[in-house]
Length: 173
Image (cartoon, rainbow, N blue to C red):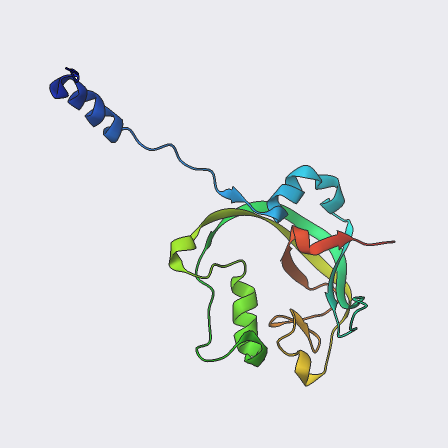
């Protein structure tokens, strides 16, 4: 015969375990936060960085559009990943520029509420020096750059914009 421990002796221990606060989980580190922690010199203040987007170069994927600037701030921040905004009945290629901007500004985001969580992002604020953006109407929902704009911000020399660190690379001065 197998004898089990008396439930009355186990009950206080179980109650104690249930009453203890659960250890706070650290937010997941996104690649941008890991990059800032691992290579802070590549994104130090004053460093020239560039954000690039690809055109329709076919098989040869060469960046055609860019924003170049200098790092004015770098930080790791915790953000809550919410559900991505979606336009019912249309795929991303059919979004208007405003709909695309809303999606891009929400990124990173998740496909369903069950995946919502806190994450750590590496954010770089850069002061714009130079840029080249697409102007063709077909590129309105192809990227963050369009007709002299970064999302809904008009690009101008000295204007500051923010991007995740892993979207930038050091300039080849």
